[in-house]
Length: 155
Image (cartoon, rainbow, N blue to C red; front, top):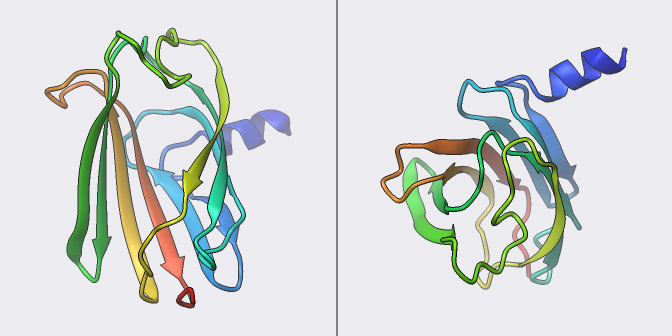
């Protein structure tokens, strides 16, 4: 039974519900065809009062993480609302715990994300997050497709 759960949890295309509340719902799928050992959790599940989210991440990367470039693209109503790129790990003075992780090593970490400084209108948002092991964006480590449904605007 446990093996079946593990298979479903890490199967590409499987949708994982991160959280649901009266004002917000967030889920994700993998957008590449590679099986990942990856678990992501976020609390509290709300957009009200500009929350600070506590994120728990457990991940076993498929390659060493000496360099990590992250690309975020957010769509709302079919239009790109945000296109953001950042180099999180460069091999020198890296501040994130994922930096320096070795292939097959379990990364288990928590971090905070400050809530948005803007109000999100009600609706469905698509967020594509890709992680690359090179600056040219050719060697993808992970690709996640988040769906965020804002059910009610924050006040």
